[in-house]
Each structure stands twice: as structure tokens, then as C-alpha cells.
Image 1 (cartoon, protein in one colour):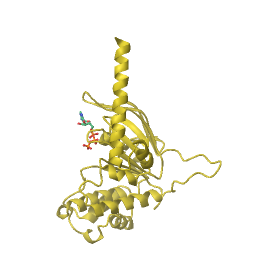
Image 2 (cartoon, helix red, strand yellow):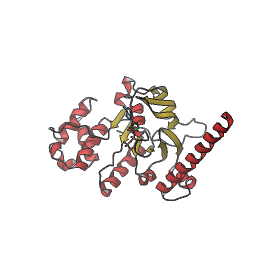
Image 3 (spheres, rainbow, N blue to C red):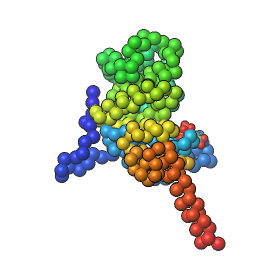
Image 4 (tube, rainbow, N blue to C red):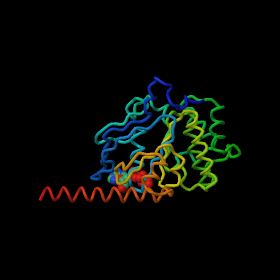
Length: 266
Ligand SMILES: Nc1ncnc2c1ncn2[C@@H]1O[C@H](COP(=O)(O)OP(=O)(O)OP(=O)(O)O)[C@@H](O)[C@H]1O
């Protein structure tokens, strides 16, 4: 099944509404301010990369989008409804960092089980297993799979319901370069057929596969830009270097602002 792909609107037509919109999003857990006033919109039918160092708030933001995180302030709209609205359950797929599948069941039984919650057919189950390249292992118990195979079962369980929005938290961690490349090809094909994807990663080289990037640091959104814009703004074709440059640039700006504020205060 495919959704309508995101295309440029015909002349006179208004552009498609964003798949996800966050406004003034704050999240505090315990005494820690984890997300600090995020504003952004995600274009439908595109891959948005969520990039930032460990601890920057990526998982917390993905949790807000799938509707399992209490917001301290602000709002998150997903497919025109507040995040977490029950009717979004069939439209949003979420793959967490730790694969959540039943280890005593086969690959096929796991995917069939998750598919049954959405009323999908046996053909959909087979298609999702094929999409992650596990056809030859469909009858194997997931406990007997390698780490990379195991995490692909989790992905198949999310794909089986053909979600309109797929949120993937660090899906390529622990995968070898060949598998990683295959997965990015799969994500691109899904976006081409209209699925909106949010893929979090702390590997900057993966940024080049995305249409748009959300750069997060210490719970702040440093920028939302394309990979080409990141290279330009960060003065490097190496996206990791470019990101580091933007981090340094924003640290200098906020230090200057802090110094000016303390001068005014004194
Ligand atoms: N329940 C909690 N109480 C207090 N702090 C928390 C809680 N959960 C997460 N944090 C902190 O919030 C920050 C952001 O965590 P989060 O898991 O969102 O980051 P991340 O960017 O996904 O990190 P990683 O790449 O390492 O998975 C971290 O400093 C983390 O220690």
C-alpha cells in the first residue's frame, strides 16, 4: 500500500500541511529540562533526520511525537491531530532503540502478531518480512537471530501496518555498512511512496540520506536545514565537521549573549 507521494503542489494549489508540527515544546523530567522550547515542522513524504550528540534529547523528542511523553509546555500535532490521539495508533509506527519483539516466537509469528492489531492480511506480513530481507529466516525463533537480524524484525513489525508516519530511534545502530545502506534505500523508497519518516541518529554521515535535518543539542534545536545547507553553514563537506562548527558558533553566540545580559544586569 502506498500513500500519496509528496510532490510540489500544482500552480495555485497550497502545499500539503506538515506531517508533524511542534510549537514551544518543553519537556522536564525530574529536575532536568530536557527539551527547551522547540519549534519545527516536518514535511510529509520526506525523511527528516534527528541528529545530535548522546543525551541531546532525541529519544525524548521521538517519544513526544509518538505520544508517550508528557509535555511540560507547548504542543505537538501529528497528521493534524494532537500527538497521542488514539486514532493515530494505526497511522504512526515507532521502532524504539531496544528491539521490542517476542524472543520465543518466530520472525513470522512476531510480524503476524503486530499486524493482527491493525487487521492486516497474511500478504502484508510476508511483504514486511521481505522488506527487511528476512524471508529466508521467517520461521526462525527470534532468540536465535544475530543482533542485526533481530533489530530488523522490530522494523518489520512497525512496517506491517503501513504507517503514514514512521518514527525510528537509531535504527542503524549495530548494523554493518551493507545493511545500513540497504535500510536507507528502503527508507527512501518508503518516502517516495508517501510515507513520512523521522530517523534519529548520532552518526552524522547518515544525514546525507535525509531531506531535512533537525540538529539538537542540550535540548535546543540549533537548526533545521537540508544536508546541503548544513555543509554550507558549517563550512565543510564533512557533515560531522559542519555540525561541530555550528555547535561552536552557537556556543559563542550564547556566551556573548550571556555576557551582555550580565553587563546590563550589573
Ligand atoms: N526520567 C528522566 N529523568 C531525568 N533525566 C532524564 C530522564 N530520562 C532521560 N533523561 C535525561 O535527558 C537527557 C536526554 O535523554 P534522551 O534519551 O532523550 O537523549 P538522546 O539524545 O536520545 O541520547 P542517546 O543518543 O544517548 O540515546 C539525557 O541527559 C538523559 O539523561
